[in-house]
Image (cartoon, rainbow, N blue to C red; front, side, top):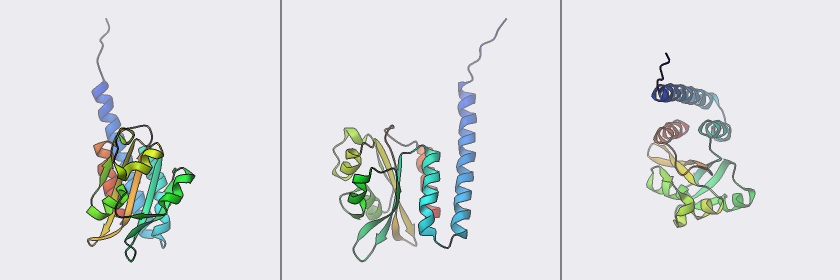
Length: 173
């Protein structure tokens, strides 16, 4: 006599626990690296690569805020098509999702980009991204820059991923 039992929920709970443990370890390692670094701006690239791999993203970018010119200046990025990189060198605070995140001082999560007609996501759409999330880097109420992640093959980021990126961005700032 055999007994069939659906273990889907148990597997999902186990997978969630493993993901959360890996996320906490990645965050702890990142904080440790930032605290020990003498060049945290350069370290952003290394940490973003790790986060991008963990989240299974296709692209990350980090901008620093140029207060004098009121623009975001590209500091680090990985996965963006080379022809688009020149367009990203400097962004105004209006006309891009990164600029909106900096301007509004809150996360922007662009979903189903290929189906939309938002002017702020035009470059992302042109590059083939389906979803993109960007967080402002804030310290003492001041905008330091932004950090964002994009994906070609999924229409949105999961809520737990967004919460994790938010915690990462807070520590990064």
